[in-house]
Amino acid sequence: MKIAPSIQPQLDWLYTTQLFGIKLGLDNIHKLLGELGLPRANMKFIHVAGTNGKGSTCAFLHSILKQAGINAGLFTSPHLVHFGERIRDAERMISPDEIEEGIARLRDRVCGWDPHPTFFELAFALALDWFARRGLEWIVLETGLGGRLDATNAITPVVSVITPIGWDHMQILGDTLAKIASEKAGIIKPSVPFITQTQDQEALDVLLETARKKTAPLTLVTEPCELPLGLSGPHQRWNAALALAALRAAGLDLPQDRLEAGLKLVEWPARFQRLRADVILDGAHNLDAARVLAQTWREQFPLQKATIVFGAVAGKDISAVLHELAPLAAAWHFTHFDSPRAMTTEELQNILGVSDVPVFHHSNLITALDATQNASPRLITGSLYLAGEVLAAFSQQGAVYERSWQ
Image (cartoon, rainbow, N blue to C red; front, side):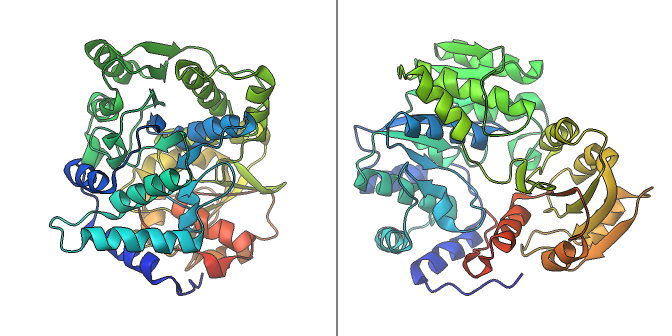
């Protein structure tokens, strides 16, 4: 896909800060927020971490608040098509002009800093600044990576939520579920209500012990939500249940009809999203995400195999993902896409190994989509960065697609 050059110089500068990489730690973000006078005293945060489901849980929370007439902020990552998706309220996303103006203010503040703030730290500071200027009281925050040292952990929430913990970012967070859970548990604050669900016992033990040590009032969700939802898959019923429990713990006693409307009207792209009746897009980029994708596929397309368009980034356990999806495959179409971390199709083929269904290679997404346009049903998956290109292609908005790798 051809990526159109940006006409926003400040946003272009922000993207260059990705070269500083991912630097976990709170010193820089505390310094930056302190200089900006953020967060404002009236801001109330619902903070969500986890390996899978945290974005969907945030989406449920935000949708319910919107339906209840509360203009809440929402900060998520990564974006799929353009940067503005990361920062929004119930009325709209941050505008291109507001992005430019906000980055310019931040750029002046951090000129000469050593160490320089990272891309994610600047994006988070931009979000809080915009939320403050919009006069927002309630804000839903999705952690970026981990929890304990993630920039979003510079705030104190009114409630903390941790979705299921699984295997991802092991090179940074640890090589056991207990180590990964310990990093996620870093968002649990003393005496602040904490919500989680039944999950792998190794991870759950860490979460429960952390809550006990910090005297954080605990709600353990043990049953999925049975109300109608706007997102597909049995795992979304657990995400919805977490959202409902978090709102109760935050002291928001909302009318039942508003809760039900928020759950049903929620929108969250690239999570078993139907681009057409027979074309599914899902950003399943790790083992647990692939597992729930396969479960949802069997629920929605019983006894039907998929033509799978697949692209992935390096640093993930792609062997496990391919293993989970292989029973669904009528054919594989491996594709490269526009990311510096994108794996080659030859690398994907080597990981897959010998296949009993046809395997095809494509140099870019457009050729992969063209080659599979008559296949039905079709599943496009493997990376959220690939998903962004797909959404841009299907919406004919390729000119506004903004490549990112964080």
